[in-house]
Length: 136
Image (cartoon, rainbow, N blue to C red; front, side):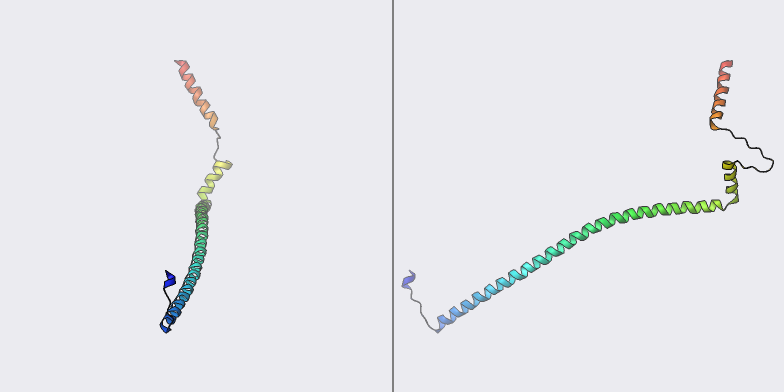
């Protein structure tokens, strides 16, 4: 069927063919340009995504480390408060006197210190209760 159609060669058809060829060339360049910029955008997005994932991981690690450090800080602050209280108590003469009396058995002039062990008090109570039961 194409054999029966004869192409006319004149200035109009030549111009149309040139315009069509130029349009096809422009379309190819436009497609290539779109593919290059699209690929470039994909690479940029992939790099940014990788960076974001790394930052998220590092953020998680740092937040757990921060929680650990805050716990340590609270413990140290408690210890500091305890030590400050102990310093205050050690500056108090009455407290020092009480410690000296209880731990080192120091006494004032004219005092007699009796040291009772805890076990002997229990035995005395048991003996007194046994003797009262045997009298009945």
